Image (cartoon, rainbow over all chains, first blue to last red; front, top):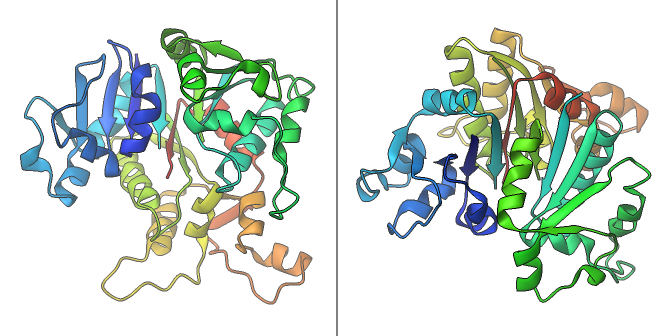
Length: 89
Length: 117
Length: 130
């Protein structure tokens, strides 16, 4: 299982299609805007958002409850659980 | 020995990111088995015909020809993204294996460490 | 687990150095080890001790220096990235006959090989780019 982090909409456009069903995805920094309009299409349903970055941008109440909220502690744990970490920016 | 995958997504010359990504790949090749993957605008680093004489920049595209000498034999790109840009493998300065998305995803598992640039 | 953290973004220009700082704190809080923090590309500006933010903003360089000093963490700035951006320690300033050194003492200038070493020896490598 690979953990993919995306920190921008641009980064998702480059490599979103590489996410596999078993992978986990974490949106950080400006990447949280990828979750704003609910049109996200990824092969994986293991989608997380870094809550501090979503809160900072006023997005928390605007992101679907199906997206799992993560803090930095969860971010660390996601890295530990993954076989490989891939940071897209 | 661990294997390293260097992933490059930035075009050359508009910023120094691409050049510094290549620097890291060359350094990596001295210590470990390294592969390189060019995605998105990163593939434009490999476009032939780059001429930087008028912009005071370094034409690091000339260095890609030496990758094999550095022991970097595996260089990959996305077939879909190459097609989207209207490019052919013959437009690139070195031989690159153009892969489908699923085969690219497999690279993340088959290498021990992924370094993104 | 042993974590290597890589920072590519510049303080005040990009969120990367602050995100990496929060991540580093969480790594330590969870009982893991930080093998090394490697500042590459514009990330090397994080070590610039001349950084002088407005009073109502945090001093990102100082926060990193304090974290490193308190927890004995190795902060490396890439020499090639640093020199071309004017981030120099006293040794490099003397070598190139520059009038000032700008690198905070909590950071160390070293080669790109330290990034590769971190990738090979840490259990996880996490990059905060821009």
